[in-house]
Length: 336
Image 1: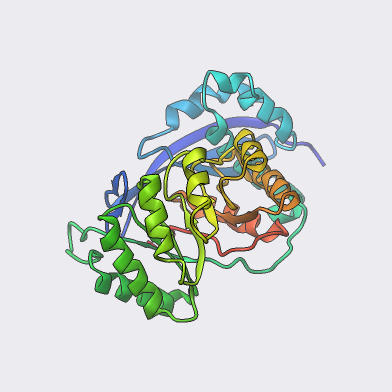
Image 2 (image 1 turned 90 degrees about the vertical axis):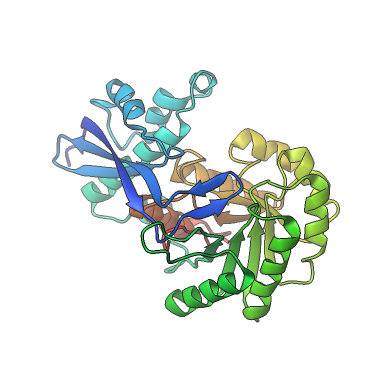
């Protein structure tokens, strides 16, 4: 077998419409997701695909700047590529972690195609044939063209959740909050749980609450069938104070998104469940490493969603298939 070498890298920004604008604590996804799709060509005629977000901005120029690092590189040699692009010293001056993640996706795609095996076989082999997902519920503005899709009231939220459950079979439901005052969202969240008896729920206000607001809110949902309470406030210290006062596991994709933060959380616990994002952590392999650390120290894990399209969703599925300690349904924006 001829070992492939990278001959070209192309990045293309795409805009994909949403059913309706998704509201969150920092504003909204205004009717679309902006993502950057990466194509990595090789001298054996195989092209691999990667994907990353960018906060609503294109990442094309950033990938163009990495082209000289990539030409001639063997896609099998992922660790060497990681040290070329985002070793600890280089990361002091730039944040290439998410760029590398997209390139890792593409290289794993290439290797799998060359060997004729799925990505999960390159990552240790699958532990399960299916990966469960939760419905991801948002307060939504109406679609600007059709007027449809608004979710503003508890009644609209429940109707939307029931429709998604009927369509997709979800049995776990996550509400993205931090949009309205806490008492308003508390009423909506409790209505959601009451309308779906036997299902599990989770709430994520995107760190919008003060510590005191988070404690008050958390105590008022302790009687529900919660998976976890996600990022109710910001910072490890704030999360630690909430954790000491609320009897629900705390989860994060905000305060533990790298190994240094993970070690800090192990030494002085602030959260119980680490939400692993294949982009934010720098690729599928780093997520698998983090999952092993979490398993050692008995922290829960789940697969996080950062507004993915199909390519990153595939990475989430393969991650969910291979980690033995997956304890919760994954998030996904894909059904929006």
